Image (cartoon, rainbow over the protein chains, first blue to last red):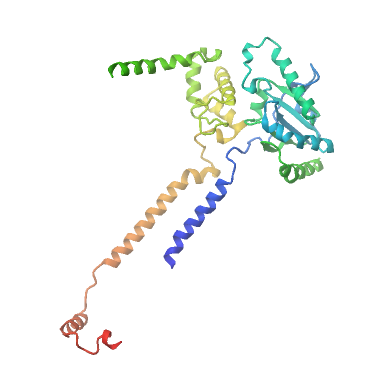
Length: 196
Length: 163
């Protein structure tokens, strides 16, 4: 009897390891940026040509930075939740429009005339927000994806929760689910709002 | 047959030329390009995960290669470039994870397992040789055995009959 206990034990350990390992999403790579200051940038806003935005403008507020694009299918899935959340007015959401033209996989930017990418970006992003609702306090245009690289974006949508001091406190990879919003983002945002 | 081999060889020789047309303008400098390949083969593409940054054709991989080119032309060392990417994407971008407390199990686990198995095997073999070692019979044992053998099997004291 006793000689079966050791293989059984090894088997059970293996089952536990596999159960944990196989239930994790390999596409969710923990971000090294959580707990670090949100990378600085200054980008033009959507809807207001010439006006720029920088994360420093949000100092003193707890806010969400949501990476989106009109070609991104999962963004579309996530969008109704963001619109509903914005209506409740919980947190300001800043949209980072990521590679609107370059990311669609069809347009070759090198063939576009100078300035055409910017106008095409504004046109597509505006049309998408008009159609599906605009949950954003404002959106900024990251046309070449440089800011996306600084934020470690590798799969749109991604959402960052940033505290009053400008430190990233949480990163959601992929669409925000109602569970993630209720169980992770909102409780943490409430706690952060109480910090000075 | 010979013709087919020649044709195949020619095709293989021409294959690199077929790709040359897709190079980006910045690829002009062969020194930068050579370093880019060395560095990006050690980096993982985050979108496809099982492909290196050098091999991947994903959008993001393209952007990151462009970024690495820029860093090379700025005169950054390989270590600085890797550090730059790790700061944004985490240790996951490295195909060779660094040795630190969270990766000790990964690096040393197999050796611990091997050492444990070897110790287990040695212990098992020792015990086995001890069990198999011939035991010397005492004079009394020999006498008892002899008595049993001499007995023709009709003795009522034999266990089989006693039962």
